[in-house]
Image (cartoon, rainbow, N blue to C red):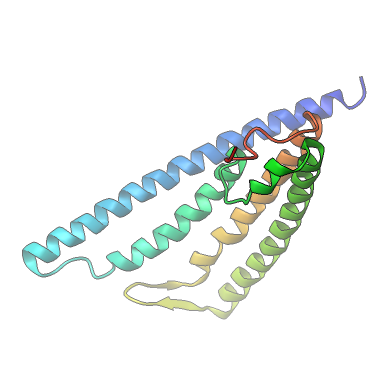
Length: 180
């Protein structure tokens, strides 16, 4: 049957990325745990010895950024990303389906644009030798490279979302609405 193998391959690929996104979410949780340990240690040390970790706040800021990037594809896959879904409850199911399809296509395009600019910023920063200078000093591109990677993974998930939507019933996604 023509096209059947492609659907099976797409499902396998989607399952692989689903496992990757889950692993990234676990890494984000571990990063959050490490951040809590560092901040707690900093507070305890400052209260007991008047000296803490001067870099703790800075590392916490970077950790929040990394956690956001690590969890974004996982949240998109689960339908738990930020969305305004109230309107989907008021329109007919077919219209909601079309809005979901349009959202996936636009999301894919936006991710490609963000990925392209993220790559450009990262490369430019590396070529210029830009540094991040606070308590810690390191090359700026170390902070920038996860951004285009995250948007690449989000673009991939938008492709899978569109494929699942296309193969499914012409109605609202199960995760489409958190209201009524």
